[in-house]
Image 1: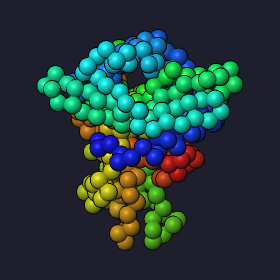
Image 2: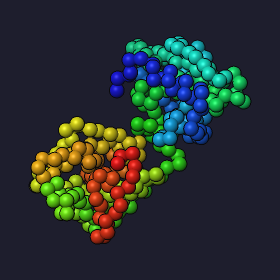
Image 3: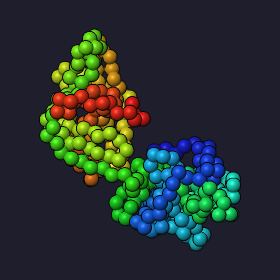
Length: 293
């Protein structure tokens, strides 16, 4: 993924965190490493989960975790690109130059650090001495020896995959007759995914979609999303009577695109049950209200 052309968003984040502090933090003893340009540039067992917003956490690492922080490693060099401060918290945007084993040097300017002069009063005191490396700006992150995808998993969230033989039916009102339902899929074997903070998701074989009716098309936006828990999802559009298109209402996991923990989702798909009607054992479920609605 190409790096953004400037550091405007990093400075805005720095102002926000220095002024208000993070939503919450949590230390972790697990080993966290960062790889860039074929070198492990950071290695620590003192990482900090930091929620910059209410969605998911980032890893912040102590300065001591980084190669070159003591200016003794010629393969890794640091320079300040911008600095500022609010409410007793000083912040800096850094450029990291990493010379790899082949002699090629790669620069990364997506790094932010904090230092608090008066840690007892600053809202950002918990971030003092910590470094934030933008997740997708480096080649890889590892928890112990396991790659981290997209962003760190939330330690307070849980995912369960439960195979089920309950009867499922997915429908939408017909565009030409709102009193009549169009059946989108009907199955008696599925996987129910329970994820903290989200409605139950019902996964079923892609082959159960109404392909022969011409109702399923590849996403015309070519939408792809990634999840640290499940993997990389592709999307389908739904084509209704009269050519009405419901975009990206179905997502799926192709073989080879799931994480090891969710390998059973390979070859399955799922409707946004915020956007279609879901029937479980003949009982119509209330559409959940989420940010996907």
